[in-house]
Length: 254
Image 1 (cartoon, rainbow, N blue to C red):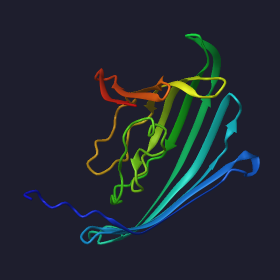
Image 2 (image 1 turned 90 degrees about the vertical axis):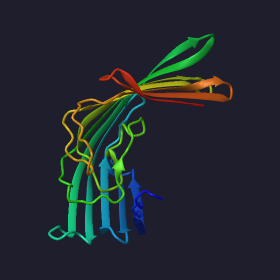
Image 3 (image 1 turned 180 degrees about the horizontal axis):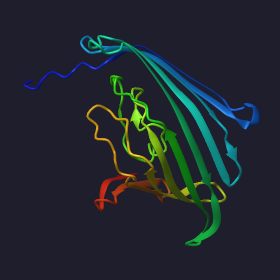
Image 4 (image 1 turned 45 degrees about the vertical axis):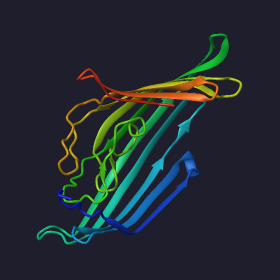
């Protein structure tokens, strides 16, 4: 009770989202679209209506061994703001092109492991992302925060969750995955993965109070999962900091 009152969070009244896609365009191209219209309501803070359009065009090229998918999109956002401070614009527009190339190769070999016939795969993956710098310092933060660093986020186009910040990027992510598969059933017995992201530029876009990144590479991510008994699976994930020579995070589950 002695603590200061918590700021009332924003209400989304209303929020409308739309997603669409076509994968049968000429020349094998694919189209994807996501859009949103949301009104952020609060009794004391700045209010806004945010309108977002994000069309994307990609060209998936795939064989049995190799895949390459270049993609280009334009993330366009418009804000209509209320209760802005004097001298601050009430209408803001942000247009950010997003370009990426996702590629992977799959190698296979037969393996005899403890008398069991298995297929072992080696699957390198390389993901390049380029997002130019856009000044977003005048845009208030309504629903956006930095996401965690893990295998789910390492291939994401934006390091932020929410629509108020589109992070600048000139980076490449490398991951190697290896699996042991039963060739008769296709069941996966063991999966191991190892990955890291490399930056070719420093960070320019951030949230208020965020310390901007200056490092050119991230921590290492590693995971190992598999079946240890017929109906029991185990999963281990680790994040290792090579600069400090220590494990930052370790997760064990089953």
